[in-house]
Length: 361
Image 1 (tube, rainbow, N blue to C red):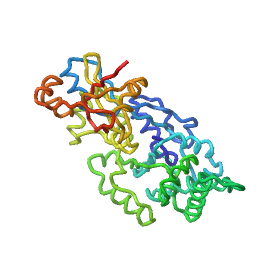
Image 2: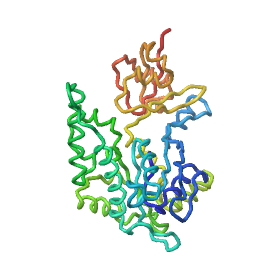
Image 3: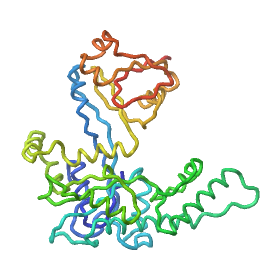
Image 4: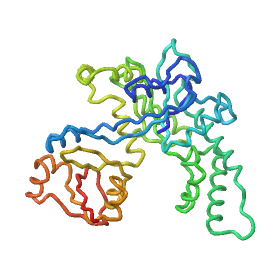
């Protein structure tokens, strides 16, 4: 996930909270962050502790999401304004763009945008579009004897260039499946999936006051279709403070505020899903672990996440759903109730599968 936005919208403050320590340099002026800071953040997963009790282990290994804290973009970034070209290159490393949008008011923090959330987002998106258009304009039309692959690639370039020239981002362009594959090698910024973090004021922590629906409807008026599920409201300042609390203090605060989980926890979980990822679980005396795989992964490839040799030597997978595993007290109880299945090479993994892989030599 690449964290982007205008200067002083709370990106580095959010990043500090994500890491639970001050690893990003949050300063009240533009371009305090020059190089992208990288943070590997655990995905909140209550299932691991419950599995650990059943198998009697104390070692829990959660899934993770990597976040890049990228310095603030400004109008003209695609032309190099404010070190923009360097910052734009960092965004290319991200699989999903997380737009941090300022919706709080604070006279002590310099306002670099318009103060209107949709307009500030559009400033960033326009710069990404211009950078993509420059990429597409550098592409050369194939000449001479043209291979089918070259023809498909050029077709995608023409469609994308036409759309971007009219102000439409790459992710909204209707491409054929083969054109989508060909376009991947262009690494277009506006072709990446996106999420939105609306950074609210401290006194709005218990209610977003319709900010999400207002933001979504505002973008739809500009012809940009997003879903409310793509947006998370968060008070980065409070999340940063909470990151310094111990678990007991954090729980006490959440209870007093009437909140089930922090905005960060909601955002990290949403990011994991936006990346098209899911987890399968292993539970033994040595450790309980959540393993990350893309949605739609088959059992042998899932085994290969544990060790690459397991793909070649895969025999079968012993599988139990998380719910059955917990309710029936582990492998033995689940097997006695007929809730343990043996799956082969064509089995598509499901979220929350508890698995033991049978591997040959």
